[in-house]
Length: 124
Image (cartoon, rainbow, N blue to C red; front, side):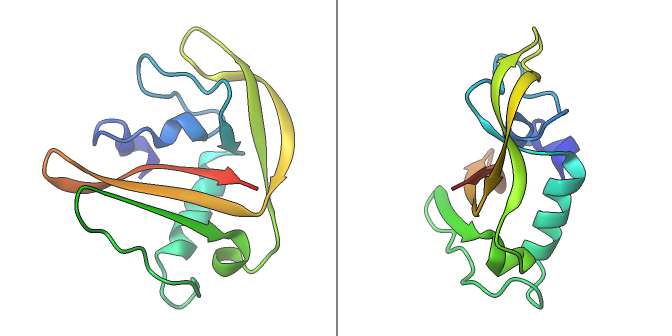
């Protein structure tokens, strides 16, 4: 999903360490998943009704937001991540502070007539 997100109109890669964010954006000042694998593990558990114990997001209109606890998805209190403080010319994080996060913010939006995951990022 991460590899196709930019092309679909999202900016998920702006919040994944090691991923290249959409052109014209940067990871500076953003919170990041530690890797695409970390994000993918979170997402796969979030979309699995046997693993995610929270309330499903209600997508209506053109935009929907949901903050979910790490515990409700991964059954642990926190996940590791980064807060980015500097990036290269492509916007990829080059200097970061390691952090622990207890929730993940998910934003969904209608882009070109289809619902897409606009972005997801760890938060406290």
